[in-house]
Image (tube, rainbow, N blue to C red):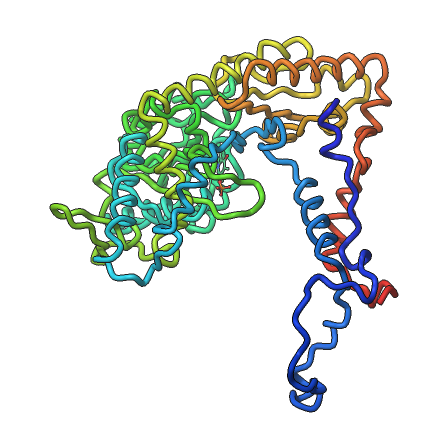
Length: 495
Ligand SMILES: *Cc1c(COP(=O)(O)O)cnc(C)c1O
């Protein structure tokens, strides 16, 4: 339980640490006479809150922020099996590369002639995304998966409108990520849910029954959020295409597919890829992401502008696409994220990327097999990138998924995604990714199995978990309804 240290710091807010007279800076004595600020600035420009700033020495400030940084559990501190999020280790070389001065010092308003290297990188990354997805036309603009979905669905709408009828509905499986129906609704479509079958995937028959000429598209996640491959996709695509609809594929789970299968070959028309999940950008803390959208030639005219083009050896930005949906983001996307993805793909190579997918799948199946019998497997179908269990076997002892997740903290592990996907009651969604070795997977499975044992013999250990962490179980409802977002020393009577 060595990892427990990671959870057991406390750190008072910096305002509680100061004491008057301490200082973090030494400046030479002034050689001019001091003036009273009030005599030179109008009262309205003088902030009186400034007097609430704590007085601290340099080392106190450094220690405070270092300790805060250590409170943050990340993939660099331990196993982070958050299903659907692909919290894999991001090689540090990609961080180094995106900080090369040539990249960090360039400006989006720089003329094209002085940005040839950046444009080449974007052009080649577009090609790589096209190759990986099997969909040749690509935009790198969207800042996240959700914005990629929005971009893709706007293109689908524009395509149908150009054909004289925007259509009314979008079909979405009941296993989908919440962003799928949200995107469809924002694009003016009503959402028709598609029930997955007893194996957790979509039957062609279910699509056949729902498909008509009012359906603009099917939004399908493949592999889906149960970690299962939608194996009827080719047949499903034919049914959708025969009635003039398009297939949007949510590619957030490309970590299980790249180098092995191309969605474009399966009949997909539009796909987004989450660079921050699959292609080496740290995520989870709200930093920049990237959701490139890859489409068929048929949809190329609707791409957001500008698109990066190449003529001979010269790279340029094309703003002149008459049918474009317009811009979806300022400038050209989150460039630093693009650099990381580019560096990652070049260091891995095509074979390396295929090995990533295969290892991610092997790891998920390893966990599935080791935990099978200890936890209920919602669908006993071979996994792709993640395995979804439930709390069904623990429910008779009054133990819920949340108790299992909290107890994992006592064992030093970040809990998996819980209560998603919604089709599995009390879901525990575990995505180990390819970057974990057997030892970590075994340690995690041992902890999960020990917890399953405790659920039978000492259920209170789970109900009161976490007990080793500094903070016990938090009141999440109160935290959501009554958030305390700002420290006001005055209001607390401490100033
Ligand atoms: C993460 C995820 C999204 C949303 O992507 P963001 O980059 O977080 O906006 C959409 N669909 C699925 C299946 C995902 O896992």
